[in-house]
Length: 170
Image 1 (cartoon, rainbow, N blue to C red):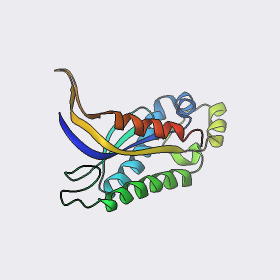
Image 2: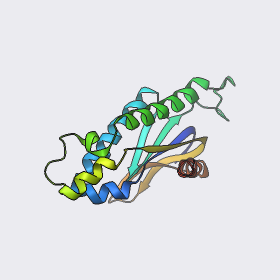
Image 3: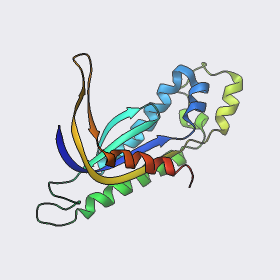
C-alpha cells in the first residue's frame, strides 16, 4: 500500500432497506441510477468513485503530494476542496429533484413491483446523505487470489463515514 492524502466522501442512500424490500431484483436499477448521478459529479469535480457497498459509496479526491491539504509549494489546494463540496451538493440536489421512487425509476422497472408496493414507492422520496473528511489513508489492493479490490484504509476514511451517519440526525 501507499500512503495518500485525500478528501474522502461517503454517500449513503436513505431508507435503503425499504426500497430493497419493495423493488426486490429491480433494486439494482435504482442503485445504478444513483451511481450514475454520483459518479458523474465526482468525476467532473476531479474525484474518483472508489466502491459501492450496498447503499453507500466511497468517493476520493486525491490531493497532490504534501501534508495537510497543501501541495509541494505549501499552497492549500482550495479548488479541490471546493470541487469536492460542490460535487456532493450537486449529487444531493439531483437526487432530491428526482422526487419519489416511482418517478425516479420511470418505466425502467417492469411489472415486477406489486400493486401494494407501487403505491408505497410513490411515498418514498429518494434522498442521500454525504460526509466529507480530509486526511491520509493507505491506498492499495485488498483481497486474495480469488478477489481483489482497490481500497483506502485509515481512521480518516472512517471519520467520513461517521460524518455521513451524523447527517441522519441533522
